[in-house]
Image 1 (cartoon, rainbow, N blue to C red):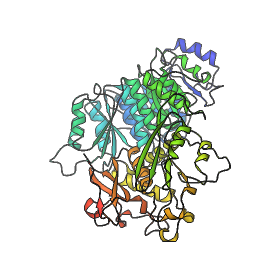
Image 2 (cartoon, one colour):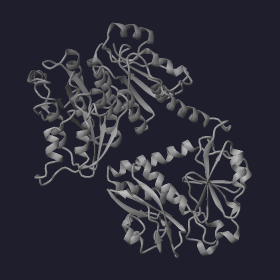
Image 3 (cartoon, rainbow, N blue to C red):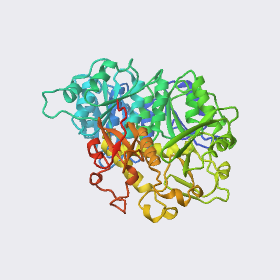
Image 4 (cartoon, helix red, strand yellow):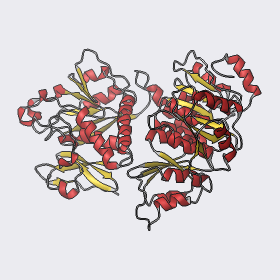
Length: 605
């Protein structure tokens, strides 16, 4: 059974073939949907049909249909040198089935690579393929599943400034979803027993007698302590920064990981039976989707909310993945599975309406005035907050609005300029009642920047922060029209997010006015989204009084100082090829004290 078939006919056949690995592609409109099945009577058929969906390499992999660790290992090498995807086919231990063999003949691969040792794929299979004219090789085979996967990986990877994903060799579910994170971070996966590090990995990372030990900056553990123990986490923490992604169970872990990855395309598979799921790995790589798990008994509301109105594919028969998920395209909303998540969803849904949420107290306006006095106002309504804000008229100020109800940028005859993430408005405060800003969208923009920074840094905090600084340099702008000539080199506005009311700035208040606190806030948010600790520090430029804001961030376990407000000094083209030339970046406290009269002391524990 191949290709696109009628839904009703296929559902009937699903009840006959329990192991059918079926994929249902549902478009994102959420109203009408079209079912496309790439399936067959078993996983062998599915692997064949998936290989038809993309341009193949001259090489293919052959893996035992029951050996999920080998499938995990193959995900580390999913593309060839030319960037083409290497297809995966399945075999039994002693014989390639007729359908797969005939398909391999039609594809005319130059080489077939066997993943796994002789117990997984015997030499009889190699002989069978060679008798049919194929060139066959076997990947490095170890004494067990861990040795096979990890020796192959260690032998081909330079771990300098690298990330790695650590998954269980005994829990297929965590291993399966870990491949999506590996794809996102463009890094490799290693597998481990529950409580003891494999000898190959131990020798590579922890052998103090070895002249050239592998170096890695970040280890991402996928799964809870039942999958990978605290003991292993602690051992890796001696050589790298360890991050664990886990939930209440495999399904919750899957959802948390999917949210971290932030993709809008999903491959939904059963979290109970890996039989049909191995084909999900290469498929998710080819269509750039994130693997998420579901129970065979029901679809959780949290999963429904994740994939609702998104592009998702089901891999597995109806016995593996319930038909209930097909109804998602018809539903507008579902309730989350617990009270906290339900409240979070209600807050998000409120942000989809232009009206202010009623009977809800929000800390949502921060007014920052010179010299850096923060007044945080709590109000039950937007109008009440505006009324309170009118009490402060002495200084020019910015209004940062990080509340979920200001959900839409609305222009009603107000001049608004947007450069990068800067929002400026030349109206008075009354105009704010007609202005809405999408905080959710703003956060998404900054999180996307942070993700790009993390990918650029590849586990090296210094490189990640270099990306953040360069992004600020090249995606924000000065507007000098409202400033007197004696402060032309000073920034005018940047925020997270910020609506700046320019007519509040009169001539007597221009001198000495800056928005360094907003630059510092932007830098801090981007660092935190990139999982780098950062704080805002007050300094005195000319006197012992605090009159400027900078940042301190923990870079590769060292606290360094940054002043991104003055990024324009020395390079008007903003190229910043060598950030080391700028004394205000990556500075020690001692060096920063040469630039400022006083630096605030804060607790950096």
